Length: 358
Image (cartoon, rainbow, N blue to C red; front, side):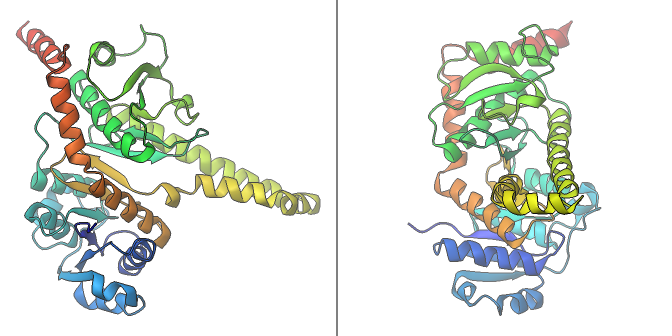
């Protein structure tokens, strides 16, 4: 089966063209059905392609004169969307010239451009940034939102749960992934009013392809007991950074310990297979590719410091979401929810209107 081509912002990320093109080439060596629209400085892209002959017949170059910088404000980036590699890659999705876009550039600018160009899906108020995290279980956990929305109401959280579950079903193959809301405790009385409302409606809703299990605390996110963790973007981003920081701390601590003495160095040689397994499991390149869910199109954010292997994984995630029709799955789930015996959206909307009228 032929896949729609993927637009790659070749200028994004810390390393830019070399790593982005190398990553796309690596992804194509693994999956020869992939085709690309490489967006950026044409001369630099052509030079990068010289090292990857497998890409010549599978890629087209779209020249972009400008690049969105890492510290550029979203409002500034929006004004230059028609000339930057990021803006043109997203526009290719809007115009139907590509099925999805991948960028390792400025996250805020990418979200702003994507939302303006592609718009949110019917039934979705706000898009959310979702990513996979490694766990002690058999499957990665999908966590959202990770920074796109600092404040969320119950309706937003419920929509995030539906979108996250649709994404998880593609990644895990489960019919009904376990979903929990991030909270300061697992007791039903814990949390803000918005969390309480979202939990109540998720428990009552019928027809959803997910299994809602209540709340989860931040220290249990990676235990492997849940497939989808939902939060507002402010809390989610803090939790994500804490998890990443803890992983780096443990890694650095192990390095320091193994270098502390000659005996420790011998111990490292003996335990190296185990430490390599840990390193591989925690390597962010192996879980690279955050997705903006809720848009009329697929946009994937690669980590700015990702290696070529990391970019290849982000491309593979993008292709899988295209192949499995992510946006259509989300639309079907939303329709199922609206026609269910308990319409949670209507309930939340009515409560919100009632509060506003007071």
